[in-house]
Image (cartoon, rainbow, N blue to C red):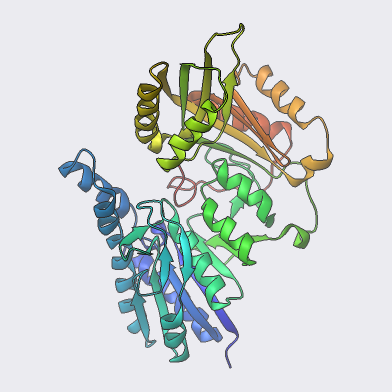
Length: 423
C-alpha cells in the first residue's frame, strides 16, 4: 500500500562523484521500499554548472542567453541519467526526464525563467506504473518552446513546484549541511541548527543571503502550501522543517543572522529631481531583468540642484544594470553611473521583531561599537538589513550573533561553501 508521494531533491554536492550519486540512489530506493511513490530532482554534479559557464566565456565575451540555457541545462540531465542507471542496478525501475519532458512550463526570460505551470501527466503516468521518476532540476520549456533555466539554485524551485503539482506530502531538500542554522557556521562555529522556521522567516533569510534554500522555492512553497524539509545528504538526522507561521510553536525575537557578499552598489549621480525619474530608473532595470534590493535617494539641498540615487543589485547583474542605466543617462542627457563592488550585507531575521521595539537600535549600536560603518539600511516587519564594507561582514555577523545570544550546541564545519549555492 502506498504511503503517498514524496519529492526528494539532491543538490550538486550530493551527487558530485560516483560514490555520492550512488548514495543518493540508495536513499531514493529506500524511500520507495518504505512504500512512497518517489519523484527525485537532481542538480548538476559538483561545480559542473560553473564549468559550463566558464566554457561559454572561453568562446564568447557576451554569450547569447538562449544558447546559455541550452548549454547549462545539460548538467542536470547528466545527473539524472546516471542516477537512473544506479537505481536500475538496485532492481528498481527508474525513468529520467528533462524539465520539458516533465511538463515544467516557464516564461520566456532566459537564464532567470519563472515557472508558469507544471503539466505533470507524464510523471503521474510513470508513478502509476510503479517507476521512480527522476527530473532534471533548474530547467523547463518556455511558452515559446525554448529550453530555459531558472537561475542559481533553481533545482529547489523545480522540486517544490513538482511537489505542489503531484500533491506530495513533503518536499525533502537534501544538501551538504544538516539544515538551516542561526548563522553561517564557517563564520560562527557555535551557530545553532533550527528545527522549525516559518515561511516568512525563511523568505527573508533567503533574500538576505542564506544559501541553503533558493528564495523562489520558498515563495512557491508558501503560495502552494508545500512543507519543506531541509536535511543532510550524508546522514539520517532530522533537519529543518519550513512551514507556515501558524504551524510554528513559538516566535523567537531573532531567529538568525544572515549575510551576503554578492552585492554591488550602483549610484546614479546628478539626475534631475523631477517627478517620474525614479519610475524611469526602476523601469529600465526591470526591463533588463535586474532585481533591486535597497534604494536610497539623496534629496538636493537647494531648488534646482541634482539628486543622487543609490541601490544594491546582485553582483552578477552589475554589468547588465550599468548598461541599462547608462542608456537611460544618455537619453536624459545628464547624470552619471558609478558602481562599488566591495559591498556586503548583514541582516537579522525574526518573527518576534514584530512585537519587540528597540531591535534596530541594538543592531546599530552593536555595529557601531565594533567600528562597522553602515552604508545603507532596509527593514521589513521581521528583518533589518545593513550594507557594510565586504571585508567587515564576518565581524558584523559574529557581533550580532553574540549580541542576540543565538549560540547553540550544534556545530558544523562544511568543507564546501555553506549551502549548495552560497555566494
